[in-house]
Image (cartoon, rainbow, N blue to C red; front, side, top):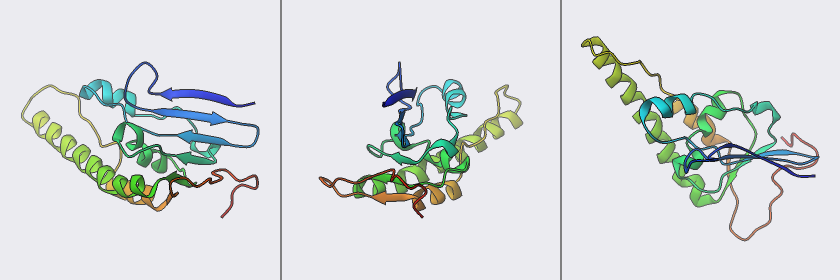
Length: 159
């Protein structure tokens, strides 16, 4: 039996996250950020409703942040399994995820300065840092187009 659970992206066009479970493996398809207004995005992106220890692999469809942007959060929470993508997707994730971490840090600093000036606004903390991005990228494997690849071997873990 195969089970598909939508833990993000359902009812919206951002934050894509789908869990595929079989009798042999659990695979996450995409791990994206919800994008929208600051407060709603912060609340939706703060957690991933999934225990990383239950995952055998992650498959990334493409590099857009609404599909890849939460991968560093998964790494931050302890995921150390493989992340499969095409080589182009893997290469694009490097600058995109680093830029997302830098924007989050800059946004948090900007909010802190507004608070210091007396503006009543909730503080924010970055979802992840560049170190989390680097850790994530180390888990990524490029799988060539038009080649079959087993993403969750029967005898797991494989390393």
